[in-house]
Length: 273
Image (cartoon, rainbow, N blue to C red; front, side, top):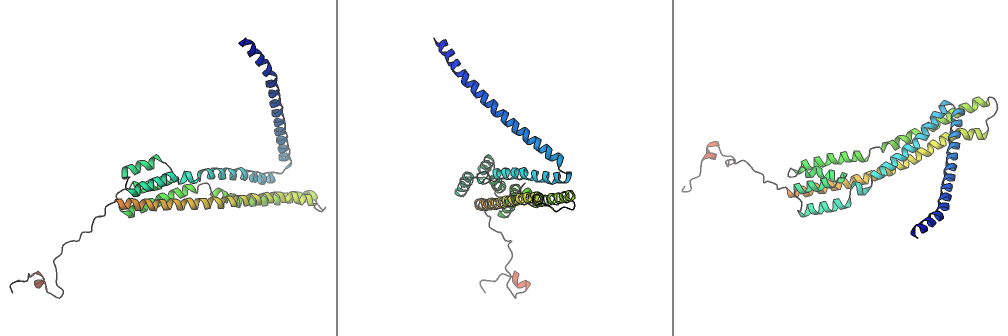
């Protein structure tokens, strides 16, 4: 009886499965046709467009995915919880000020929580027991290195801001030259002028978006850099407080009375006189 019910269930499910497969096949065919149509249109445009205009449009087309990749990668890398984790900074500084961490424990704690904040604090922890000036110098170098890492690839957006309008202007000039050569003595039409302005419009649009993204990234980097600087300063203060400061020693010199000669400065006064 169990086998009979299983067969009935399979027979009931078979038409539904075939219908779903047919629908998926139909969708895939539609997608393939659209892709083929787009590819054919691109090939036709490539064959009909002069080489100079293709270079300008190709450069503009390359700026878009390049800028998007930089924005996506930097947005992921510049998250505050990955650069300055709140859990690490709060626990580390609290334990350090309370005296619960010595040099070895603080070193292990920083190495177990890898992040730019931990590496800045680690620069001071590795020099535990040294003078505060050495700690400050080490933290400053680590902060500079981490700031450079935060700014990596962001300069690409600034380059796109400069390059995209130039590529658009190049495409516009080349298109104008082609249209005027083809028109000859006849006046230019408005659609032809609009076609010539398209590269410049696209270039200015790409440059504007890249400039906005660059400014946003730099503001975020400055805020994260300030947080790293504060963490480094607090770490230096906490580590310096745990380091005993030796009292200054002065060489013993004989007491010399002002205005007395050499013989008088060595003479010991007689108490009985």
